[in-house]
Image 1 (cartoon, rainbow, N blue to C red):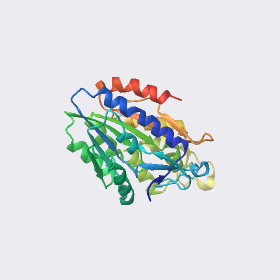
Image 2 (image 1 turned 180 degrees about the vertical axis):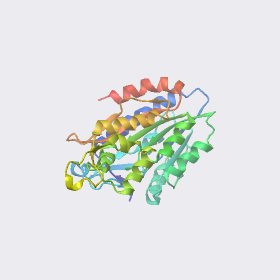
Image 3 (image 1 turned 90 degrees about the vertical axis):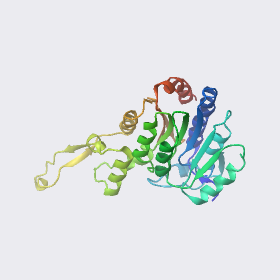
Image 4 (image 1 turned 120 degrees about the vertical axis):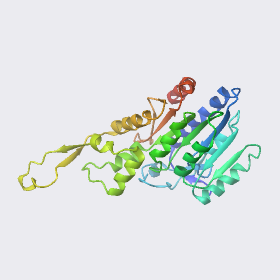
Length: 292
C-alpha cells in the first residue's frame, strides 16, 4: 500500500483549505523568534487516491480506508513540507507501519528539513509532544484528520492546554456520529463508550434523547422509549460547544464538507489556544473558510 484511498472532491477541498493556512502562518511568525512546528496526527502515506462518487457514500463508522478511485492528490504531509517559509520542525504521526514506510520515502525528498516520523497512536504521541515541547519559545500548527472516531477528547484537552497550537480538526459529525446516535436510543455499549471518549462527557445522552411516555398498558412496566432530538446541525453545534469549552477561540462557522450530491459528511474546524494568536488567525481563517 503506497497511498490512502479515501474520500472524493470534499477531501481535496479540505486539504486545499487547510494547506492555504500554512504559509500565512509561517509568514506571520517568521521574524518573531519562535520555533515554528508542524504536527500531523494522522499523516497516512503522504498521498491520497480520491474515491469514486459511489465510494463516497460507503464511509463506515470506524473505517481506515475507502476503496476505489484513481485521482491522486497530495496529502497534508506534502503540502506541509512544501510550505514557504518552512516550519523549523515537522512531526508526522502514523501508527500503520506500511503507511509510515511510504511516508518515509516522501520525507526523504526533503533532506533540508527537520522531520520526525512517529509510528504510534496519535492519542499517545500528541499529548506527549504537548508536554515535551517548550511552548515559551514555540508555536505550532496541528492537523487532526482522523479516519473516523479515533480522536480522544483527552488529546484535544492536551492540545488546548498548551495555549500555543493552532488546530485544524475534521469532525465526522454526519458520517459517523449521527449514524451512531440511533433513533431508538438503543446504542451498543461500545458505541456509548466511543462517544463518551470522543466528546469527553456523557452529556450528549441527555441532550440528544428525550423520554417518550409509553401509552400502551401492556408495556407500563418496561423502561420508557426515547426520541432522538438532534439533527445534523444540533450535533455539529454540540461539537463546537465542546471545543469552545477548552480553546481560547473556535471559528464559529466550520466548513461543512459534502459529497457531490450534497450529503453532509464532515466539518472542518479551526481552534486557537491564545488571544494574541487568535486575532491574526481569525482574519486568515475567515478568508479560507469563505472561499469558493
